[in-house]
Length: 216
Image (cartoon, rainbow, N blue to C red; front, side):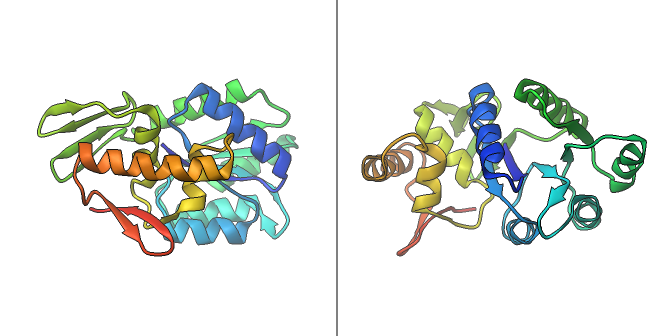
């Protein structure tokens, strides 16, 4: 489950990411802090859901939400600190799928995400050649046989899925965000090697001097 988190307050953004992953460690959350960064990521990558703050330094979240819906079929949950009658009208006009008012409990946000997923029938399964990945159950099958992946191995596979390329640093920060960089760097190599042995040696492509991508 890939989520684009658009929130300009770094502390709030970090807390949302950290706490959401305690509810579902299968969430892959990309943090951006401006509309410009959000646009760049939407062009390069595919996301299942957008969490969008309305008050952004380089533009209006309402108008940006409308533009997203015009070009992408992605559900949006708006996060806003103000909520008057006019704001309710603006939310409806934004075409967003849901909203949550700050300050909020992350559990409520998580439940709204789950509800949005169900309403939009977001698939949690995909197939790459003879390999099927069930993101909800955290299971992988090859030729109909279940292949056991360790948690970190599965998280790397899930993180890379449908993304053009990710740098080593991006993967390390996402998967081993609470570990030191040197230790995590070695762990990444070990896990990538293990995934290739268990599934298919070419399923993860190495982008020289940069990182990795999933081979479709």
